[in-house]
Figure 1 (cartoon, rainbow, N blue to C red):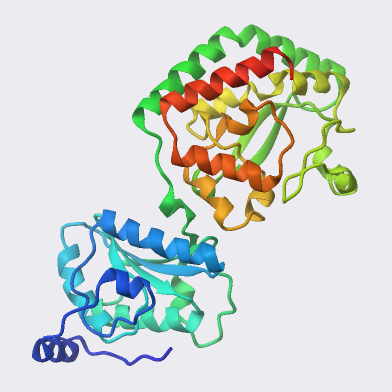
Figure 2 (figure 1 turned 180 degrees about the vertical axis):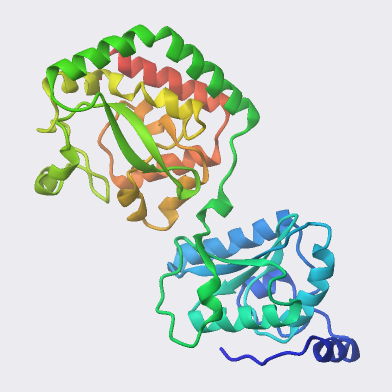
Length: 366
């Protein structure tokens, strides 16, 4: 992609004389190049809808797209910045919508990103609005852009590189969060004697810590530390590679029904699901919910197909549809489709139904 160094005053005069209007956001998202002044800055809701449209195309073809995010110090002056930025974009070939992400953030979507196009765009934007007037970050879907940055593309070296996955995150409804906090608080209080007994037995029956802590992919793919009572020998994760031939789950997940790494007391914990109780702490901390897609270890989550990563749009949970069906062995695709169905139909009524079904299977020790 080629570009010119644009003098803002010159581009403004050209635009005023031509009287041209911009292309629609839907046309630009479809790959039409914006070579005239954008008609308007899309509001946050419309921008999110356009980014979702870009995401659908990215998932279908598994081709990444990026977004240059301009963060301004104050929201009050963003309209003035937009007047300048729109003139700059009028002289640059931009593929994708341009709109608000937050009151003080403007996002410029970039189709089929590469370092040259990103660097050229950043150079033109900085030239138009003035260096140091805002902070620039590069968001790429689904993970931060990994490309060789040839020498000479110095502008991109100052970019913060981030995953666009959190942009699509759906916050917990306040009613669901309230239920989580109340239920987790009551559960921790009532089950504190059980916590103490289990902790003593874990410590006395095998060497190692009481809790198993592991990085999992949370809301928007952001890693968090999950808490469980340790049910396996200490440092069991180091043995996983040697046990891959016993893996009973397809896809990137690793599951063995009779895991040889489990301790004798640990087998009871796993069968009774008591090993999951410490995750009530994760619920109180806001990293998990009572109900939601089970969080995968980061390496397994990163290995998911692109469409499967949509499960990261909502807060992960202690239990979900798969657990409510008794943890029956299903294909990884089926498991992911269950999660996506929950994402699309999440409600308090659905949560209650899943919790009751999960308790039924736990009490029957299935």
